[in-house]
Image 1: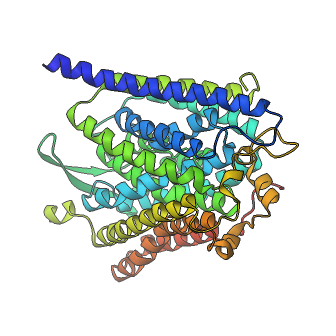
Image 2: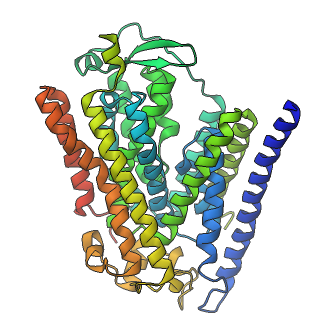
Image 3: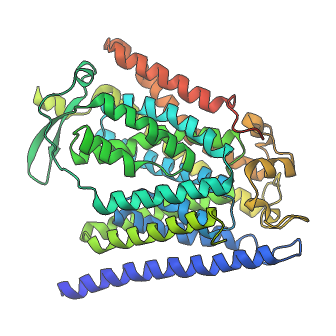
Length: 324
Length: 147
C-alpha cells in the first residue's frame, strides 16, 4: 500500500515534469518557427500563449513547493528560455509572481510569529534599496548579457541547492552588538519537538552586507531571492531554519516590491504575462502544499535541481548565442 | 513573560492584518480586470492580438521586443502615465498590480505610529527610511539605461 502510494507520487511528479518539458520543447520550436516566418502575422493565436503559460506556471507552482524553492527562481529561466517573451517582461512578471506569493504567505507567517518583523525590517531596508539598483542595472543591460549572467546565477543556485546544508537550530553563542541594540531575537513554538525555542542572531553586519548583493541580484534577474535569503539568515546569522524560511518569504514582499516598481515604471510589465503566471503559480502551489502534506519527496528536489540546471544552461547558451 | 514573547508583537499583527486585506483586494482586482481585458469588455490601448504579431522589419513579435522598444512602437507612456490609460482594458490591470505594489508601503505607514508610541526609535527610523525607499521606487523618477 505504502509502496503503491510512493509509486503514485513519483508517477505524478514524473508526469508533471514530462508535461513541462514537452510544453517547453513544443513552444520553443514554435517560437523558432515564428521567428523564421517572414510574414507580419504570427500563426499562433494570441490566446495560446497565456493559456500555455498558465499550464506551465501551474506545474511550476507544484514543483516549487515540492522542491522547496520560490516560484520566481523557476519562472524566470524557464519562461525566459522557452517562451517568445522578451526577458524584460519575464523579469517584471517574475518579480510580481514572487511578490504575490510572498504577500499571500506573509500575513499567516507574521501572525504565527514565524516571520519576524524585527529581523526582517533592517534586512528589508538594505535589500529593497539594493533591488532598485539591481532592477536599473538589469533593464540597462543587453538581453544576451542578462541571459549569460542569469544562466551563471541559476547554475550557482543549483550548486547551492545541491550542496548547502541547513541547520534547524544553529548555535549562537553570543549575539553581536547590532542585533542586541536592535533587539533582534524571539521565541517560537517548535511543534516537531514540542518545545519553545528561543532564538537570537549574530554576525548581523556581515549578513546585512550580503543582502546588498542579494537585493541587486533579485532586482536584476527578477528571481525572488529565497534561495539566498535562507542560507544567509540561517547559516550565517544563526536564525532557526523555520524562522529563516518564514522571514525570507515575508522579506520578498518588500524586496520585490521596490524592484517591481522600477519594472512597472519602465513599461516592463505586461498583464498578459503577469496575471496567468500569478494565478497559475498560486493554484499550483496550493496543490503542491496538499501533495507535500502527505510526503516529503526528496526525489522531487533533485528533479527541480535538474530542471534548474537545464534552464540555467539554456539561459547561458542563449546568451552566448550558441542555442538560439 | 515567555508567553508574551511567544506571541507576535502589536506592530507585527497590525502589519499582518493590513497585508492580508490588501493582498486579497489586489489579487481579486487583478483577476477581475484581467477577465475584462481578455473578454474585450473594454477596448485595449494595445490591441490584444497585436502582442503576438511580428511587425514588419522585425524578427520577433511585439512581446519579444525590449520594453523600451514596445513602448516606442505603441507610444506607451512610462512612469505613472498608465493612470491616464486606466480606462483601457490592458491598463486597467495596472490598478491591481499597483495595489499589490503599494501594499508594503501602507503596512509600514500603519506600524509607524505603534513604533513611535513604543518609543522604538531605531525601528521608527528604519520604517521611515523604508517608506522613503519604496516611494522613490514607485515615483518613476528613476530611469534605467540610456533608452
